[in-house]
Length: 69
Image (cartoon, rainbow, N blue to C red; front, side):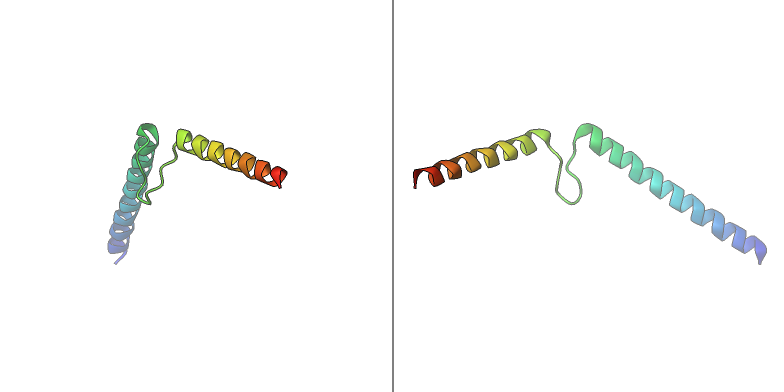
């Protein structure tokens, strides 16, 4: 009975360690090559900068519209 428990726990630890290391390797690979994540949201610095620039331009346009009224 003890040997079965030891085998079960060994298999469980091997499974969990291999799964964690696989996910870690996939995460590093995706980060290094900038691959889109499974959720579909990739962090792209140019895209983020473009969004900030668009928002700043929109704020300036709204301030100009408020100033003209």
